[in-house]
Picture 1 (cartoon, one colour):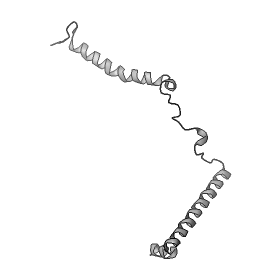
Picture 2 (cartoon, rainbow, N blue to C red):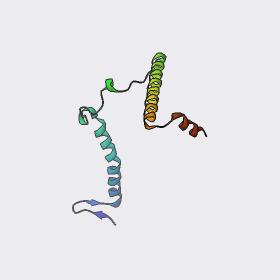
Picture 3 (spheres, rainbow, N blue to C red):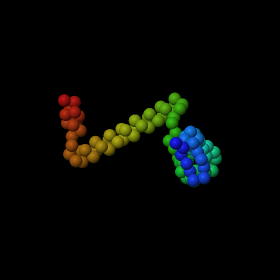
Picture 4 (cartoon, rainbow, N blue to C red):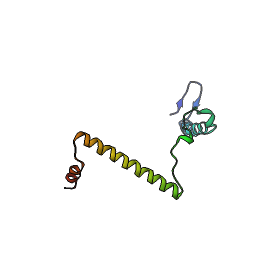
Length: 102
């Protein structure tokens, strides 16, 4: 039994072949459209951050040492600030450390 359109006489195998072709070519054509000139089509000014404002990963040994020293200093400063805040609130830091260890 054939599948009939008003003006076209398609057999079932021709219809299945047309469906297969459509299913195969649709994603390929979408990928082709998206893949060509993406800078022009999807360009949104200011979307990506300026590379100068991003964090730069240290690569040289002296840069790594300087970054580690900076991180240690920041950690020490934060600890001092928290200890000072704890003293203001009347919390003894040594008592808290003893209760953690037991």
